[in-house]
Image 1 (cartoon, rainbow, N blue to C red):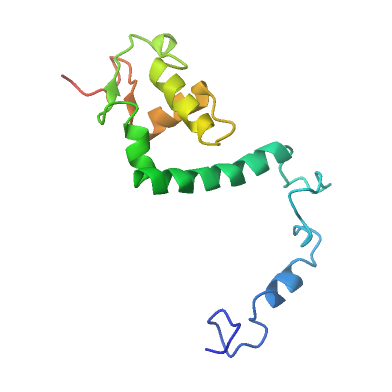
Image 2 (cartoon, rainbow, N blue to C red):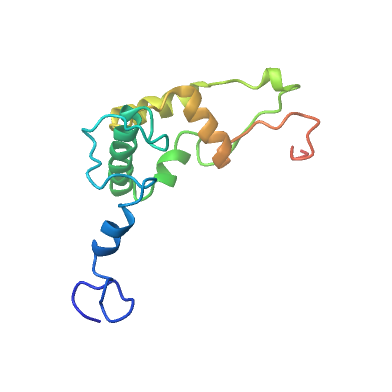
Length: 146
């Protein structure tokens, strides 16, 4: 494989950047000069909030830092629920909380480590999605019988 190729063909038109220049000439492609400092473009596919774009990048860096500190983000997350899922059996969907003391603590720890856009409600939804919290209502077929 020749120097600078991506592993496809002989290297002709496969050097890093050459394909990108061709692809970025179209009307619907993102401008190659897109940087974090640029404001919203007329292209509807771009995020409306550059704060969220910056937060995503900074959150990725903070995520890697947590991985280095704790060995894995998984271990860090499970530490807020004692290593096993919190099982709640609300009677109805109206009884499912939007946040809990555990999600408050998790959210605060994330903010202290540099994460942004990680409020307690968002963190609680993350905890539900990842299985740290089991909030299936009592009549739900997914609720484990005990």
